[in-house]
Image (tube, rainbow, N blue to C red; front, side, top):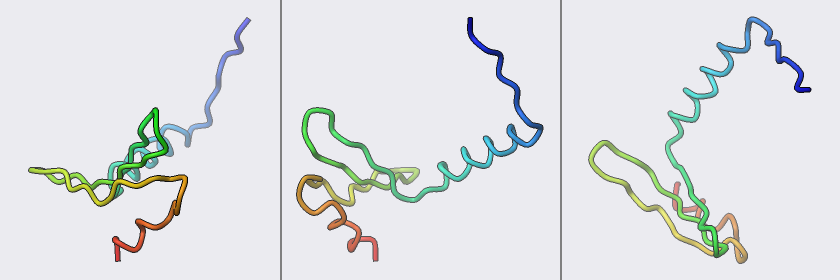
Amino acid sequence: MAKRLAFLPEVPREIEEARDWYARRLYRNRRLTKFPILVVYREYDDRTLIVTIYDTSRRPDHWKKRLR
């Protein structure tokens, strides 16, 4: 039998704040499923800018210098 969940009164506000934080993130990323490849991108109203496509098995933080 599954237990019922109970939430404190602050939880709905915290969920909304977390959703808003993720919506404001400038850079997003997607990992390819069959390869250790990560695509980092930024979405604009009229386009999507690819920042980098890189192999995560090599230098995983190498792309971050492009954001400076």
